Length: 638
Image (cartoon, rainbow, N blue to C red; front, side, top):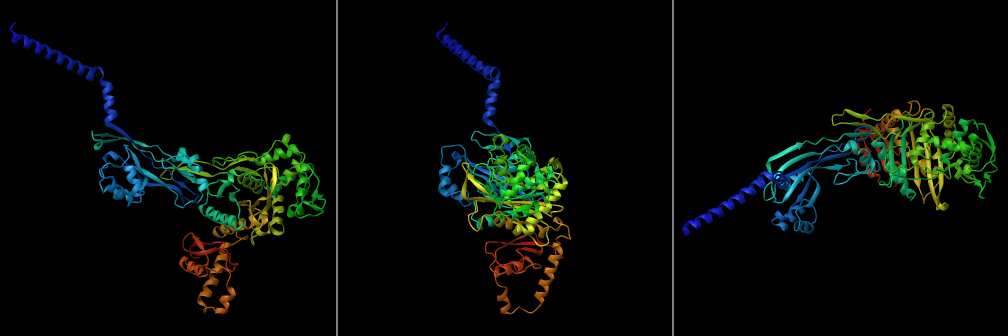
């Protein structure tokens, strides 16, 4: 073979080997490891992105939104593609997306992903998109808002920026509200840019359902406002107001101070004399006492085991049950508890719901403190009869009072009425549920009679509203620290319901550690109860029978008087001076006219509703109180 032919043969052999290698490699890539490399390519080129589902709305009982999700966008950047971070940082700072220097630091990080904003409103997003900034990306999301501000914050809870429910009904109803995210698939080219032409929706998002609560936003607002004023006036640590409809267990208001701490369901306190409702109702139901049962209260001092006697704040001698309740006699309550006995008293208190969670449905609810009788001291029976050595929550007290008020039925408190879709169709409803019957109807009627006297001529006179049939009880519990009662630390309580004969509303007010202007329940919490209930009555006359408290007639009469005054000649300066220091009457005026009149008098105010002023709290000619807002109720002209 010639040398030239040898060279050709060698080159051809090499060529065949190379071809064989290439073919072998192709076989390996295209056939043997085809699936592996296909998957690898998809991982590098195909991306999936979730499409956030619209979170459901939380409504009050009148379908006023308390929490809802508005359209928004998540904004993030890939610093690798930001060509001029200094300019981009300045541009983004103009949209209040952060400090210019902080944004510059973000945009120059050695990362492929940095957050700019998690919930940017649509209008700002569109304006930023017009800037066409390379490396800046937008993803549709939602922004959770509370249209009424922090109203009922302790009930609603929060939703974090990554859509995690935190506390309140946002957490407990998350399975309904959350919805199901959709999925979007798209390719990116070698430069990492999205190729929208081949983007595809894998699955569409399913919006969350909405929840209708039993809360009344207006009552909640008034309860919170009045609670804040009372906490400030008495320089207290906190407190709460709970309003229940005793006919079905609906929670109408659950105000808490501080807002973030859910006082009504978490805070445990000694209820003091307000707890005597349970002692007296149990004894009446068992036939151990009646309204004419007379006991010697030993001048308001009863010796019990443990050395320290039980004393009355309003001592007396021999008295019957009616007088004992009116005076709030600790001694009489202790002697009544003795008649009931340890085991029976414990059993009945358990039946009232103490020592158990009410099942309200909010996280962190406490069961309170009700020790087993075997753990009671030699004086526990007597002291528990007067509201000591037992720990309760405000919601427990509210449900116990509601049960006595409605004829004996202990309801499970209802906070959620129903779950609906975006068309208003009911997907799930939560009916009122009676847990058990705890007292007879006759006992309920007797208790109403006894508790009326507390309001009319007893320790609760500051809760009295003219023409309104109220039953209630004051309480002042001394606080214990490490098992020892602390001097000067009290918990003030007032529990009441109305109308006493056929109740439609129960209200429990608790103020924790008042340190100024008194500390008794009748001094601190009875006025708080009155202020809240007065508003409720003026807003909704269906709360009471017309013959008991005809709010509409009263408002109409006051309006006529205002019109007559408006037509009459202007008052003399002497008359104006004579009326100084009182709230002016603004019923019948437009909101602008009423606001001007109050502003001229130096009075802060707020309004609820629309139309003309049909009622005001405080009423006209009430002495001015600089700490109290004047609440205006607006409605249609009559």
